[in-house]
Amino acid sequence: MQSLLKEIKSCKVCKEFLEHGVNPVFSFSPDCKIAIIGQAPGRIVHETSIPWNDKSGENLRSWMGIDADTFYDDEFLAIIPMGFCYPGKGKSGDLPPRKECAPLWHEKIFEQMRDLELIILIGQYAQEKYLESSRKESLTKTIQNFEEYLPKYFVLPHPSPRNNIWQAKNPWFKDKVLPTLKSKVQSLLP
Image 1 (cartoon, one colour):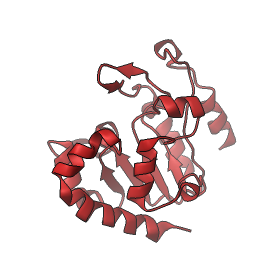
Image 2 (cartoon, helix red, strand yellow):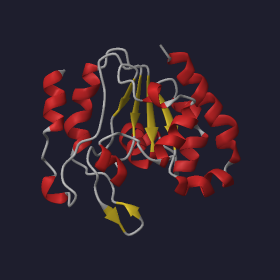
Image 3 (tube, one colour):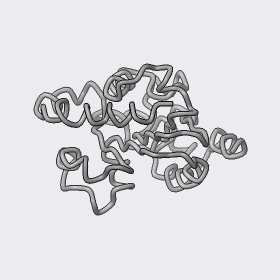
Image 4 (cartoon, rainbow, N blue to C red):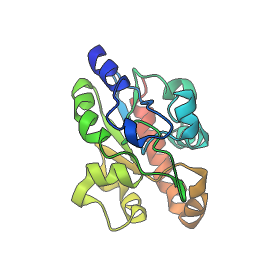
């Protein structure tokens, strides 16, 4: 376990593509009950090395119904992005996560977590990889049908404030999806 953590922290596979440098941001332990698979660290997370340390993280913790101490308890919750380092800025938001990380590290990490009960898939990149052909024709349709992926997976949109318009257009998300998520997370709390 310690050698895997050290190996990921020292990874430089994508170094030449990362203008802001290499800084893998993740957390996990063998005892985690929940894993969050998101996109990739943003600029603030890259600078602080604290996963989900931004407004998106505040929204995600609210959606899950947990405080920061619980969220950052790596004995309970793993944070495993699709791309471990900040990919940089694109024309409309951050660039997509680097494609090298998930194939290189995810399986090795999941082999370590013997008590994992729930994997939260945030956004299209995580859902494409883990749901494959069972995903629906759009992110919205996939999330509307979230119960199909339980008990193993819980699908969510990205909790970015940019998605507030999407949430306003889809009130069922707040009324049906979030209460189910909170209940599931509460059932797994230590």
